Length: 276
Image (tube, rainbow, N blue to C red; front, side, top):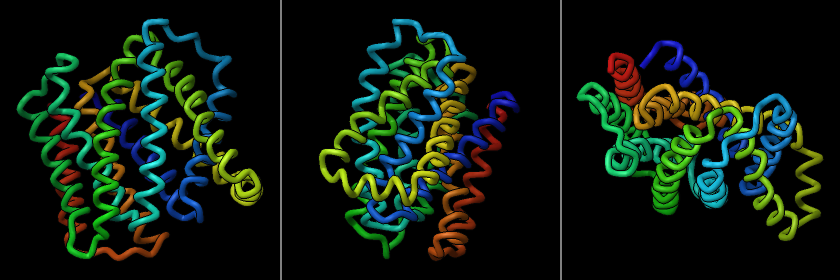
C-alpha cells in the first residue's frame, strides 16, 4: 500500500473515532447519531456543487448502502447505550475487516498476499483483544458483533460502488447526503420536540461530527480505489487505537496492560500492510 494512501487512511481513522466519541458522550444515543448524520448531510450538500455526478452504474449500490446504513446507525446507538465505547467500538470495527477479507475473494474477486493476510490478522487480533474481557456487558457484545457484520456488508458494497461511480468523492458525498434523511425522519416522527431540543443544545457537535464522518468515509472509499478493499478496511480500523485513547482520556473509561499489548499488535499489523 502506498505511503500517502496509508497516512490518509490513518487520518480518516482518527476522524472516525472522534465522531463515535461524540455519540457516546451524548444523552439519547440514537438522536446523537441522527444529529451527526444530519451534520454530514449539511457538509455534503455544501460540497456537492464542486464534484461531478457519479456514474449511473453505482446507483443500485448506493441505494442498498443507504438502507444498510440505517441499521448501522441504530446498532451504533444501541451498543453505546448498553456498554462502554472502549468495549463496543473495538468489537464493531475489529471483526468487520476480517469478514471483509474472507468475503473479498468470492464476491469481488480480490485476494490478499501473505503479507496482506498477516497484517489483517494482526490488526483484527489486537482489536479483538481490546474488546474481549470478562466485565463486558453481554448485550453490548452481541450488538457490537451484529454491527460488525453490517459494517462488513456496507464496506464491500461501497467499495464496489465507489469504483463504479468514477469518482469516489462524488459517491461518498451523495451517499452521506441521502442516508441522513430516513434516520432524521424517524427521529422527527418519534419525538420532534426532543429532536429540536437536542438540535439547539448539540447542533454544533452534530455538524463537527458530521464533517468527521464525511471526511473519514470519503478517505476510506477513495483509498479502496487505490488499494485492495480488505487491506484498507483493516488499516482503517486502527481507529480503535484512537478510540481507546479518547475513551480513557476524555470519557474516563478504564485502561490496562491488555490494551497496550493490543495496541502494539494493531501497529504491527499496520506496518505489515504497508509492506504488502
